[in-house]
Length: 354
Ligand code: KG4
Ligand code: ZN
Image (tube, rainbow, N blue to C red):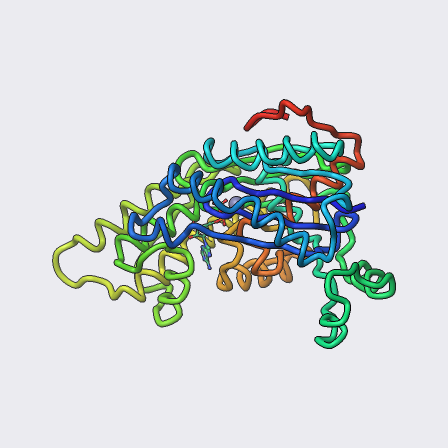
């Protein structure tokens, strides 16, 4: 079964074809990030206009790269939220039209839940260049598809999921049949938002996450005393640490080096994420932890989670770095699983509804 995924929740317009919910046949991403850079943040109106301009092209390209035609699509999956309302409307309207015209089912997929599914996708195997040139736009041979499917990680029945992105920081309990229960969430800023804002304070540019990670490599993570353990339990808080960084930078006397500040900030945020995620595993007696979202691309974070998981004998899954950021493959993949569990959306799907 081939599912088409469409993702337009923020600044990426993405379309992807996924086979049987596991093997990515194509995953095309067009980003309007460069248009937002000078504003040091996403401008919703600019993002929705960019989606309108490129959505058809992105879907066409995804079909082409997968070697499929539009009539090969069995299922249309689209991000239903959370996200920017104008951006979501572009993807949803396009998906509704396509599903109606093709007479194929439509599935609205939650963006955060899809971030957790990204760890269970795998890429189709690469074909030798000459073979690819000769085949042009034909589907992959069955032998190669079978090989790719064997490479996909098995889907666990119960797991703890941490979504850590620019808009959200949430812990979920995921049960069989892809039912998600929220265990905790940020009470103010998301972790990625804190990375972006602190990078701005440090003059490192936008987006802040990759810039802080790069700068932190040359710094001492214990040089500046920072912490963001936030409220008790499984909720997070990242707005206080931003102000703490500002005060440390404004303080008279010896100011910290930018690299030390970046490293200390990154360490504090990651320690809060590590502590609460493993607490959620312990409380629910679950030995599988899955991390998704843009901040999960951070290598310092990955190393810390892996270290702690080894100590506690917990299995931790991360998506391939490129699949940590917003993409439509995760939407197509989870959409297929929801379809298999009986979920259908109405042709009148609107943002945030089912
Ligand atoms: O998941 P995503 O692409 O979009 C949302 O759904 O928000 O996440 C974007 C966020 C941004 O805040 C960006 O600064 C952060 O992910 N990010 C990172 C890294 N790469 C992206 N944060 C820390 N380290 C990184 N390497
Ligand atoms: Zn996201």
